[in-house]
Image 1 (tube, rainbow, N blue to C red):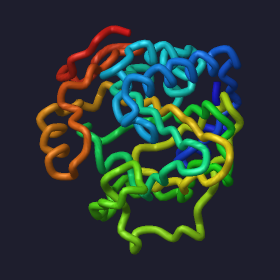
Image 2 (image 1 turned 90 degrees about the vertical axis):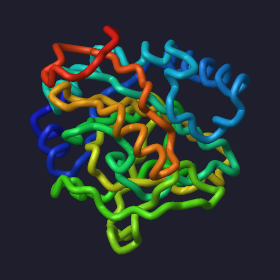
Image 3 (image 1 turned 180 degrees about the horizontal axis):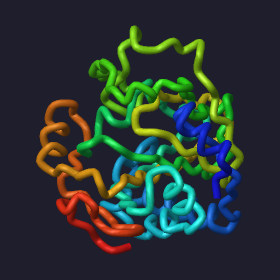
Image 4 (image 1 turned 135 degrees about the horizontal axis):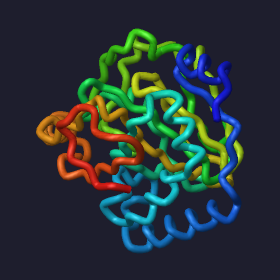
Length: 252
């Protein structure tokens, strides 16, 4: 469970690294499952935006009781998992993730999600760990993004340079098996991996069921920002009930 100080840090900074360690055997199983995915879909070398479209077995890792307990402390006891992604930066030439806010991409209203970012490998400054702007979530507003078409990035939208000061970034260094939790409005990104070590990570996207996953909005967003279309996404009720009364869930 998160301590009161850790809960306060999450709300103040927009992120927290809890006292959690995924077992080594689970990490090895994730690596094997990811290798199988890449064997069948090499186009996901750097980024797979929607794991459930290809392997529902990844759901097992988001069902971890300790992770759900911590998420519940932050967003309440009615929790849905609406997506998991895999960010994999191969050694030597892993792509960067541009500075962005998650909420720029997501069809959730009101916009609310706690992301659990699981380090499958050690995530270091050298191999392109997550970088965040502390406290940048506090106004709960989306900043200006621009379309990016460069071939060396994982996403299609990048924060306008006027919206952040990279000199204020915190590096989220994690050992393999650790997680970080961050808010949907937090400004973050990561550098390319030019090191000899890979940097693989899974994101688990949890929303409170008081929010609505808007499938029509998902389709519209996909057209406007040239991103993956989440309109047909499977959404899993992990705990509690649908407080909005408008979501359609699969029971996990």
